[in-house]
Length: 205
Image (cartoon, rainbow, N blue to C red; front, side):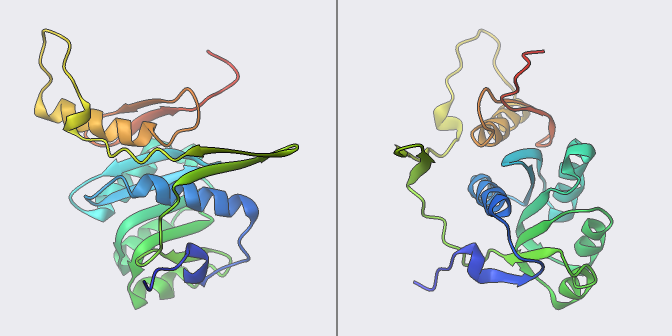
């Protein structure tokens, strides 16, 4: 009830393209894994920088610092309110889309200076996709969406050396990101900040 798609919640910006829609969907699917303040920067359907922190401003700064080159022209997704201070930080760099739970009026005024920048409010956006569907020549292929929530319950220590609490937190954080990287995914993280994300590239090197 009262749930909308993200296309119903566009507050400003240029017309949304097919590729924009795929990136937005990828970002929202990954963002829903996290409860604490988290920022995900997506490029070509893959997260290129992710961070969780006690404050959303810190999460954004760390996500952007993860891979500034790949972040250029990408989309930023945040699971908290965007204030004027955060909006100023984001506006220093070139992004195509900003998605957040909500925006203060002061933040929207800052973003409004960039007329083409797409702003999407995700507060009541419905995320209910239970099937992954892809069109192919001659039809469609369908599979169940991976709805498993990653937590300590998914982990089973099989080594003699026990992981510390911070190691386990980083491992869970990494697995959440890894779940949303397309094919042969590798995620390196420290202190709930990605330091390297590898998707399925042609070269194994």
